[in-house]
Amino acid sequence: MDKETLTADRSAKSAKEEKKWEAVIEAVLFTMGNSVELSRLAAAIDQDEDTAREAVLRLMKRYETGKKGMQIIALENSYQMCTRSEYYENLIRVACAPKKQVLSEVVLETLSIIAYKQPVTKLEIEKIRGVKSDHAVNKLVEYNLVYEVGRLDAPGRPALFATTEEFLRRFGIGSTQNLPAADPLVTAEIRMEVEEELSGSGLLLTEEENNEDRHQEDI
Image (cartoon, rainbow, N blue to C red; front, side, top):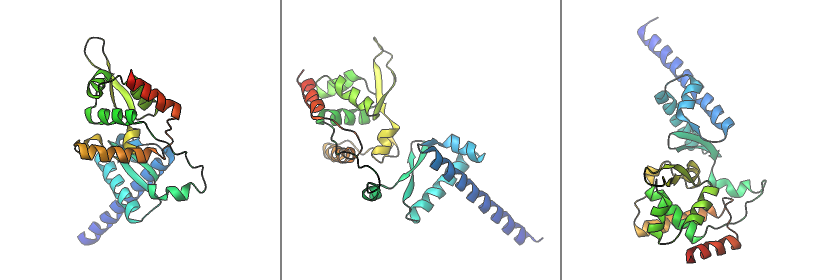
C-alpha cells in the first residue's frame, strides 16, 4: 500500500470516528433533555474534552446550516438540545399554550442587579434599590432564575445570590461573560427583552402578587 493510499485510509477512518462521536453526542443530548456538561459528553465518547468540544461544535454547525427544527446551545461549559424559538407558534398548535405572564418592575430590577453584580447579597441589592428586596429575591429563586451560590465570609454569613443556568437558557445567553455593557440605554433594552421573553415562559405574577410587590416597595 503506497503512502497516498494509506493517508486516504486514515482520513476516512478519522472521519468515520468523528461521525460516530457526533451521533453519540446527539443521542445523549436528545435523551437527557436538559444541559449536559462537556466532561460527561467526553466520557460518553471515551475521548478528552477537547475532542468532545470539537464534535459538539461540528454537530451544532450541522443543525444550524441544515435549518433543523432543533438546535444545540452552549450554556457555560454545558450543551443542550432544544427546539428553535421561531417555531413556537407551530408548537402550540399541538400543545397547550402557556398563559401570558409578566414580571413586576421590582422583580425585573432585582434580576438585573443580580445578573450584573453577582455574586451579591440581599443587603447589597437593597443598597442599590433603596428598599427591602426579600420578596423579589424569593420570587426569582422560586422561578429558578437565581440561586444561593454560597455565603459571604462576614458577620452573619449572608447568602450570596447568582443567576442560574435557566437564566442563561431563557434569555439566550451562552455565559454571564456575554452580558452587554450595563449602560442605562442597554439595560432598559435588556429589561424589555427579558419581559417579552418571560411573557411566554410560564412564569406568572398574579395581580395579587403584583400588589404584594408594591406593598413591599412601600415598606
